[in-house]
Structure formats: C-alpha cells, structure tokens
Image 1 (cartoon, rainbow, N blue to C red):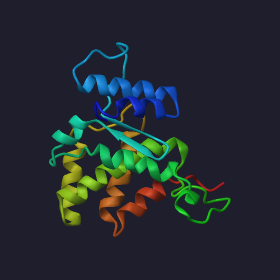
Image 2 (cartoon, rainbow, N blue to C red):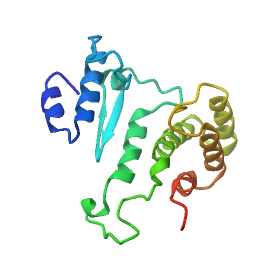
Image 3 (cartoon, rainbow, N blue to C red):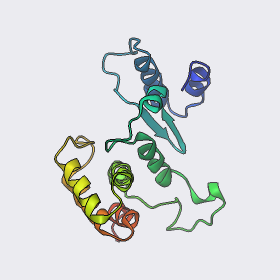
Length: 177
C-alpha cells in the first residue's frame, strides 16, 4: 500500500475489519499513531484472493531467515480462491484450488512460508534437516494460532519427502468423514 492507493484500497475492502487492519498497518508503517492502542502489529494480510503487504516489509526483506510473509499470504489464496475463478472445473468435493481444513489454514500458510525458506536455504535433504533444526531451536511463528509441534512435525515430513509441498497439503487437508 502506498500513499497514492491507500484510500481506494480501504474503500474496496470487503470487510470493515480488513479496512481497519490495513489502515492500522499503513499508519504503523509510517510511525504514525494507530487508530487504537490494541491495533494488530502486522506487515501483511489477505482477504479472499488479494494479498496486502506493507512497503517497508518489501523494501527491507532479508533473505536470511525463515520469514516470508509474501509466501504466507499467497498460501491463503489457495484455500480462498474458487476453482471457477480460474476457469477450472468445480465439483462438490473440489470447490477451491486446495482443500484445506478450516482449522489448519494458518498452519498451512506458516508451513508453506517456512518450507519455501528451507528450500532456498539448503539444496539437499541433509541441509534442509539442519536448517529445520536451527529453525526449531529459535523463535517459532504463530504460537497463538497453531500447534507448533504439529507445525514442526509437518516440516520434518516435508524436508524428508521427494515432494514436500504434497506432504504439507496432506497434513492440512480435512480428515475423511
């Protein structure tokens, strides 16, 4: 969001909560006072099939850790975007691009975020296991919105698999009834 587009972005948001969060994100990024003292300290969010990231995050992103909010927010699109939006066939069991259990949507996004970084930081399964070990011993994301041990277990499966993305998807899919 920029000074040139902040107003139309806020007006176009579907939900008032999105406008509120985006306005606070924008103000905080400019070291201005937020609309309320309990404003969330966020650098990005997604609404339906649109991702928002602050300019400061994009300008100052460092390619040395396990954070990548662009991947995190983009991961949410997979469970928010209907197949028909992209011209794909929709069935009763396949309405969205990826079928992610509602309670595991944040887990899915955080796992995608970390796994994308593990792939960049190491080019072998052994290197990815070492990078995951380093990640596990540090500060983990999402403690209030996901089970961190489940997160680490999913990442451990992903780094050892031929197709780690598939393992993440399987772990976050709804359980068959």
